[in-house]
Amino acid sequence: MTRAQPVVAIYPGSFDPITKGHEDVARRSLRIADRVLVGVACTASPAKRNLFSVEERLGMVQEVFQDDSGIEACQFEGLLVDFAREVGAHFIIRGLRAVSDFEYEFQMAQMNRELWSEAETVFLTPDQRYSFLSASLVREVSRLGGDVSRFVSEPVLRRLTGASGE
Ligand code: PNS
Image (cartoon, rainbow, N blue to C red):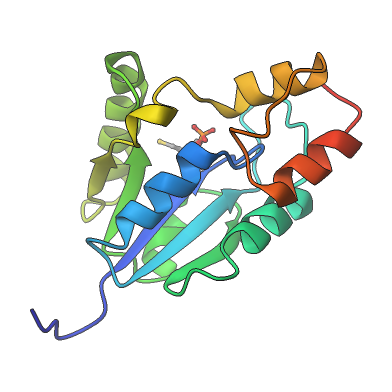
């Protein structure tokens, strides 16, 4: 199929840190988009305290995808829909691991569409090997001395080893 213009998707998240589940979703997104912008949110939600600074989170995303053509790392501040509009994104990608993710994801998708009527959210499921995986569990297991090398790539592992914990 020849497309008139490249299809751009934004895959936003906290990525604190990026896990192999996130990586899997980003790479799958290339099946439906020509360019995937992995957008690291600067603005922390009031309920969350990030382990890594936005610079560190962005650096990890950049390193993880350095050999993946079509996937680019970027950071954004403020509303996702404003950023999506600015970069000309055709849709927003979110990963769905289980039914328990759905309520929050559905609310966000609907709110984003209220804010920008053109916001289309596409949900992708990661490989089932990663269906239980979350950044918060990776942080916790790592903080308590567990081996997380199966769940994150080397650039993340290196920084987790150096991180002082939550
Ligand atoms: O990985 P996360 O923490 O589930 O990602 C949530 C994220 C960053 C995608 C969401 O909080 C977001 O879009 N933040 C940017 C601010 C915004 O647009 N908030 C309204 C969302 S409906």
